[in-house]
Amino acid sequence: MPDFTLKNIPKALHARLQAEAERSSRSINQEILFRLQHSFDADEARLTALHAKWVYEALNSGAAKPLTDAEVDAAIERGATRARYRKRTART
Image (cartoon, rainbow, N blue to C red; front, side, top):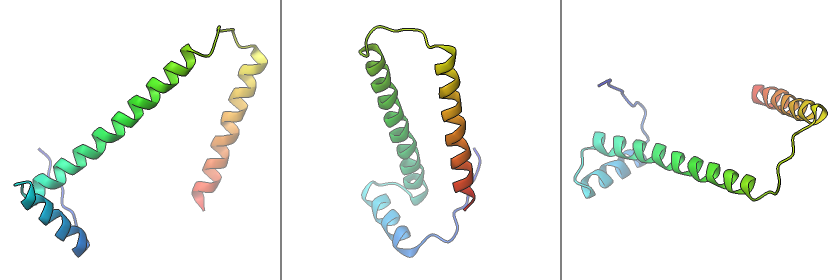
């Protein structure tokens, strides 16, 4: 298993980790791994719920109709415009 070293941990955070590790009968390393895995699991659960919401909304949005070429082109242009904006604002 790969190793990873954390540096410059704020004292308050270290104290909280140590206290929670002791409370949970884990080492500090185990506590960090537990919390890191928990954060990824929570992110995945939120994303899964969001996808389920999109599917539900799509299925309940009414009868499907094919997009016209103009609608597809307009959607692509909106996406490209947003991407250019995000790229510009990310630099600053």
